[in-house]
Image 1 (cartoon, helix red, strand yellow):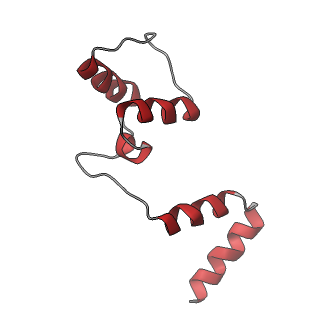
Image 2: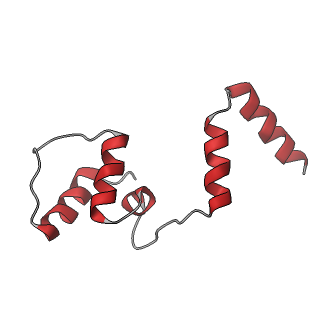
Length: 84
């Protein structure tokens, strides 16, 4: 089940007494700024329950590189990993 991000943002916002436009659906860059203001990460915002995910520097680097690959390249990487 997907989290209701607006509800989570509202909870953080209300704790700080901040206001914002009602029913606004934030973009990813907006969510990053919101998380920065709240002092949390995107993974903490999207985490279910009390579990948060923290990526190591290497994991972040891998994800950044993965995002730069096209579908064929991603498939090749997956195939390589399957062979290991």
